[in-house]
Image (cartoon, rainbow, N blue to C red):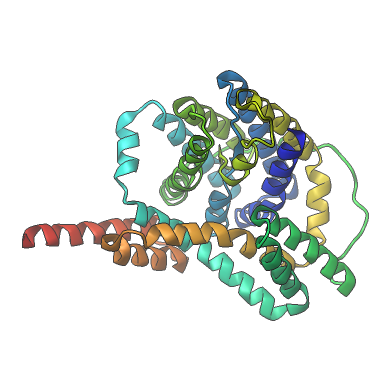
Length: 380
């Protein structure tokens, strides 16, 4: 049980911490706010996983929203206070989805292909930036890519961690890493007074909510069902939405259901008795508390790595979500053109009226898809 929980936590932390750091940098978070961000994410995941697993006696594993962090990292003109407001609203919308059926129906009405395309458009620029970092610093990034490709053949979840280890070694051997001593201290939560800017609420909070639901929560519930467990959907949405709102007051973005790492914690290797596997949620929670307390040391070490290593790591970590998003975007033939339009607009980085590209991409795709359906209906 402990090995599965440890592997799941290390993969969840190591494979996407660079993306969260990019998100923090994009909204101008100070070092103290960044540390608080990571701390509160860890504590939210620990509290939610422990409570839901204990309450429902099924293994519930939570994660921070990696696609959501990428969405935040792609935003521009958003400060930390506005970001906190967006995090709180996104959490509120998730919690409301648990109790308001009209809101749940509205989300289901958005075509899957267009929702996937919005996510793909958000992720694509980061993967392209990784390719540019490989061209600029091949001695650092290409070994990471090679190790990633080889490890992925045998153990896909560990591939990003292996790439990170390779990047650390390459940066050390080349002298590109600036290693120095780190002051060990306990992290402290930093309150961020939220600001609710209409443009940011529409351009960041709403897309963040949609990304969390489509790419994290729904796959997370599906993973539980595939493992033979009935997910506590309503309570899970209420809890993750509530703790996301609370963590948002300290600068942390969304906590959601886990999918890939959850699968690690639900197999027979955890416990031969499926009825007792819920306890892995408690072990998982303890490990995340430890990672949260150690976050200043971990962030200090990552800060010494070259930018090319971090850009390459982000790109490799997002390849799998990008693959899933593009697959969803192109799955339905009648949605493909609208989905590609959504990808193009969302990836453009454009901002109009203070609203980011993800919202405009989603809107463009929905409008175009609606026009196509209306035209076809009139031709019948």
